[in-house]
Length: 347
Ligand code: PEP
Ligand code: MN
Image (cartoon, rainbow, N blue to C red; front, side, top):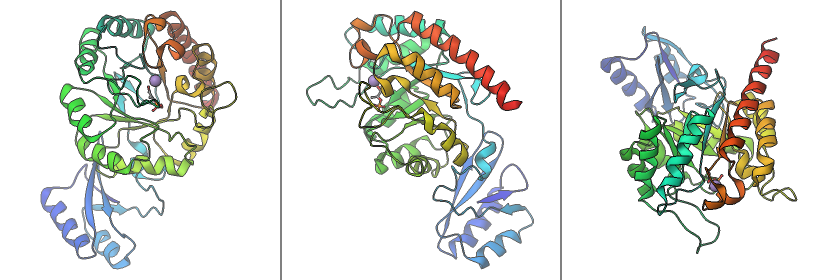
């Protein structure tokens, strides 16, 4: 990783470093942060001669040689100072809440509009809504591209940015063109490296964020962070890590709640952790406790399924979605706990 003395390299400087690393079979990938651009050396960066030549350039502050399978996402990376701003919130400075229906019902768009309004009223800063759905049962409703218009109309009506899952490459361009702020990678696709690469390529240079769910089959912490590295390697570091429960489920729960990996993640990576308790426990009645547990473990945010009338919802909503009142109360308690915890951490 090349850290220049200035905020970014000039085109001539970039050409010079690119030329040097090319002699050693490497390429340069700029990583554009809010304040500063840093330059990843892609390839085997262990050659001392290459490092010496780069360190000798008068516009280079230093070269970071992090030996980590995820050198960009690693907490020791210079990206650790990168801040992700979404919906008016700088992650880490305030509890960030994404909420909304599991699945947008294209036949009844008003449920989504009313849910979006309720989500805003409850104090969430981003709205979620599933357009394309990964369903275990191949005969279940798989989503509908028309729901994308409904999602964005909900965003316009509330003024809040939106998150939706992209399941295949063709969804990425559609979502970005429509104006989706946060692309969600689902638990079933969390290890789909070609999709991760395609997302990385597509979001490079954009303010778009990616909510990366943890693989459903108990992906080890390093595997989870490495999946994020696939995206970051293309130049966009706006990645949120989302534990969402793993299989097999704890008896009685949909999955095995895994908010407890938050401190482990935080030890290894700078990426904000946004926990999804809804899919973790799988039942609305258990969601508030799981949400608070996530905050207690140090989560920076929550992703909650919520619907104005859960029994009229589709997908997971009848089982998992919080009502507007449940959502508002969960957010209120979670924010109070977040402030308490922050005080404890600071003390
Ligand atoms: C969802 O968010 O509705 C969803 C399908 O999530 P996951 O990929 O975690 O199952
Ligand atoms: Mn769902």
